[in-house]
Image 1 (spheres, one colour):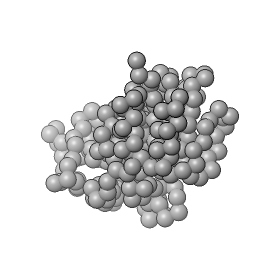
Image 2 (tube, one colour; image 1 turned 90 degrees about the vertical axis):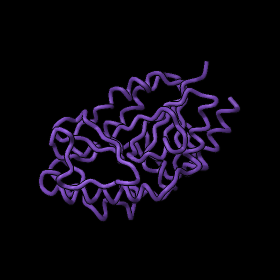
Image 3 (cartoon, helix red, strand yellow; image 1 turned 135 degrees about the horizontal axis):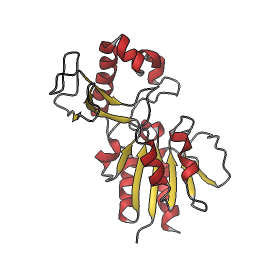
Length: 230
């Protein structure tokens, strides 16, 4: 039976593909304040600006490709039962070939009805934009299928249950400073090895973490070598 490998990925996973990160210098939040584009209040105050922001992000996503790190994780499915839990809203894990991806914060290429959050539609490259007046079949305005700041994270409990099943945990490109995702490490079973891939210093209140201080592509390559030698 294959070992259960759980991946927790964040913005650093996709940075090498050219996806703008939020918290780093030059990130999206310097151009678009959170309060204006990524909160329920912003949606109520100026839905046109919110829609424009996510239309821009979708166009950006269509012009980038998965990096070697994404492909490396997909390759690990040959040897492990891999489950990815990502804070990213891009679809680069899927485009690289990963089979099991849970998006904690929603998915950029999907939109949903403001009248029924279970009514979710997937956009494609031929029409990646939505505007005021774009409605679901029941006549409700469509909005980005994104978990905004101030909204609950509906899949966090499912993610915690997945982490509890881990034989190995790998954290890539996230500082784990944003809750509730930051709390997922507390569900890792005792004795399960944890690897953290990030070129920057990451402050984690645990002593049982193996650090790989590299960007995602090189870090996943090193991880592969480490796991194959176990």
